[in-house]
Length: 119
Image 1 (cartoon, rainbow, N blue to C red):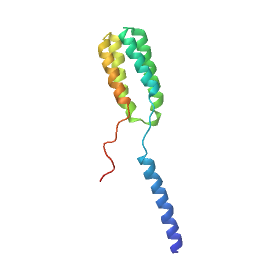
Image 2: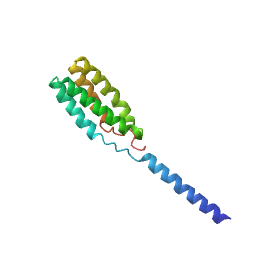
Image 3: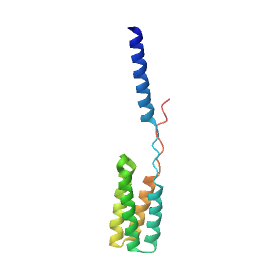
Image 4: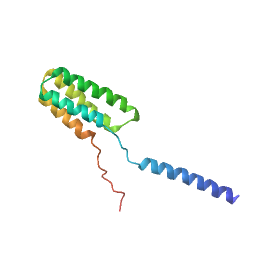
């Protein structure tokens, strides 16, 4: 009887240990394609190419929507900036559009952990 309980406790502890390690693993999100599209957006905005800018923004939004399936919180932070850049680009305000794209680019970079595990 004690051997069965001991085996059950061992199995449950392995299960819990696996969940703890999975929950603590860093999320490595790769936004390199969206970042390259953002670079293209900035270049198009500097050249005041409205059609190219809108096309690049649409591509970035579609790509980020496809990447959103993994419930990324970072995507939810930078997508509104891209939509605001698209709106500014449509109205011809390329300085504001560049500002929104630069803000979106900073949100795409991985954030450093503010908690080091305690002391």
